[in-house]
Amino acid sequence: MVDVPVADPPATLVVKPQCDYLSWSVVDGYVDDLAAQVAYVPGAGHAVHLEQPGDVAEVLEDFVAGRTPGGLLEAPKTVPATFRGPP
Image (cartoon, rainbow, N blue to C red):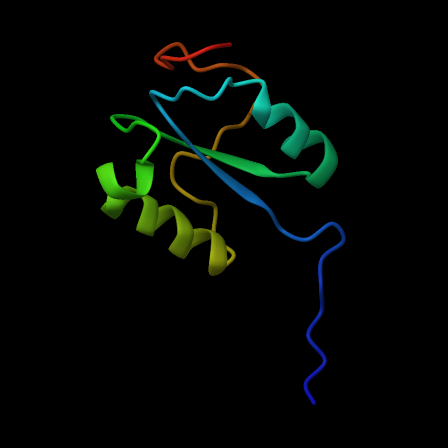
């Protein structure tokens, strides 16, 4: 059996679209409780994986490979100026 190291807390990535009916404040819990990284995908709505599949695939590929994902926010609790949705 292979011993695989597990991060504590586990690595967590939140992919947040530009236009979403979920409040940006939802991100706070993930950042606070799980030290989540947050990637912002402009030009997408709630179905970000369907609307911007190439961008989402690139973000996930980078995250899984241990690289800094494109669109990663330095200050994930700060709502981007282009975000359209509840604060």
